[in-house]
Figure 1 (cartoon, rainbow, N blue to C red):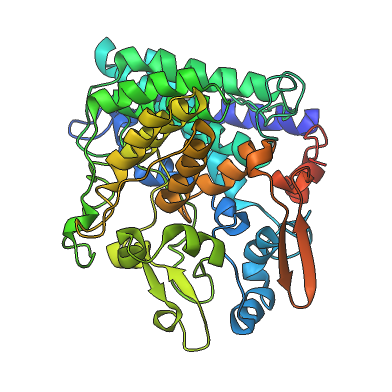
Figure 2: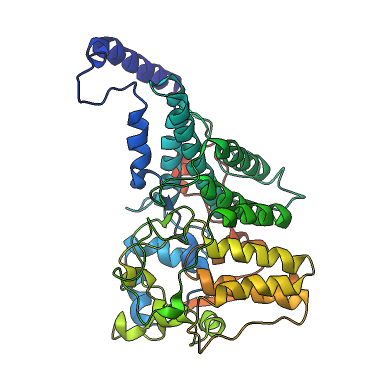
Length: 465
């Protein structure tokens, strides 16, 4: 922003502040007063301000395989769906500059969440209210900010590598809202450090529980920390915080007791006992043509047909469209709301399972996997998994993560963190309209590009390769 323009904005702000001062000081009984802490509670209660997470990962992961010409033509023939097909084919440009849809709403939404969080953190200390209530609301805002940065760093930056994290580019770290902001990119390590600082400093002031899963509590922070450390490849700390989360909440929904799923018999996201903090993928539920998520043959082979996650949360193509084939994800349509991508009880259990597998304890790894699986099958269909070695246990843990989290962001995050491990390396290919696209383990396309609209406006915002 040019200096003269900045000064103009500052001057205009000052003019309005002086001209309206006598009005904002009037405290009308029964109405909200700007300086009161209760205003920030209302802001935190607005789930639309904080709940969104990026959705690009769902299109890029190997969970899906768009194979039908009718669906491909619908997605490819409209600029509105360009982000979907461009993410699906791992293109170096997701949002084409100069088009109607040149802005990245995923990026914008995350920084909007951060703006709200920063405003609460900065303004609450001078608000009228008790120290306890102000500390609690500040802590909630810190959890939301940490979640947004964790989503951003796993979307627009390289996977964490301890040997290069201090030099690899992260994402702009905005912690205060000012008239101008530097959008230079600090290191990945700096961003992760801030995430950990926000979460650990928030824990003492957070309540043990909240009325709704959209409001952060201690278990939310523990869950976010467990997830954060997993994607830093720090399995000991991931296990530690997963333990703390499970000590507060460990309930699983028993899918084996259900013959169908609907909003009438399945808990809503805000009260689901499995969810530690409700976060949703940006945009609409992807259960209808043309954006319905067609499951890959690879995923379906891992899932199996006796698994209740297959029976209850997927449908044949005919449910979506008479011109489609295969099988589709349908959890959102069954329950009637968007998919949760926030930390949850099954995730904590599988983090513990992975910790044991990576520490040569196959028996305990399978114990935690089976503690989850017993609630994912009808009793007659349940067979405990066994492992012949820690390596075999780790493979089974990763497979279980695929079954549990398909089409919910984490598979792409897992593909990113596992691509440097020989046992999980794979080259993926996709063909769309006669063109074949490849994603190799060393590909730069494991990092989503920052929209050109943003980098053109902000020259200090370095592009991803």
